[in-house]
Length: 311
Image (cartoon, rainbow, N blue to C red):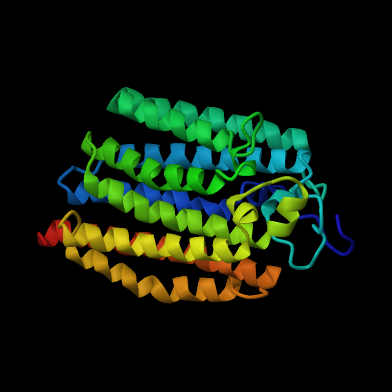
């Protein structure tokens, strides 16, 4: 550990290692999908909602642990970890707070627990949940795990978009409604784009370090200017998907209130434009998380109000 820093408590260390702050992404995606089903006429089952949420969170945390383990053993996170603006709970290994074995075992245990919880939903809701769950677990594990290491071959953005957005939203919708819908697909695209956008901010910050260690994220492949354009496109498509859904009356008109979150999206892009520092990128990541959460919360409020008001 760097001199002058005390060792945090055990719970704090594990919360840091699990990247607990990122749990808002699966939480909000599952919540949006569940309450969209409620708006569509399904009776909201809280036990099913909480079970789906628990499974998603465990798989997400397991993916974070495995990601940190492989980034460390591949040498991706070894540089500049003592910098004042270093960011990323993966650094618990570098700081000697946890061992690689502890992180790997924690990841496998989280995956096993999430899979067991998910199987209860398969029993209650049927094989479509199994297919979505298997796809999610596969993608999260092999995000950085060998032999696929998807994030190292420019597929991380696509994987996060597909799993966090359409995967979680459609899955949560199906658990409640026992069917799929175009509305859930389009809303899933919105949520997935915002999750992918957060990842892109992270990758923009790490372009040079990732290239140095052979981690070819999409940002590292296409360069900073094109990656910034991808970031703007992701956020734009999130809003467009909602507006199209409202236009075709797939979701209620109050959903257009998501435009109130535009200042966060604009500020995020401003923070990472030009010769932005690592600290500016870190603030942009926080802004991106706030954007995704507020965007989803507005949708949930629109769905609930419209169900009761018959809008």
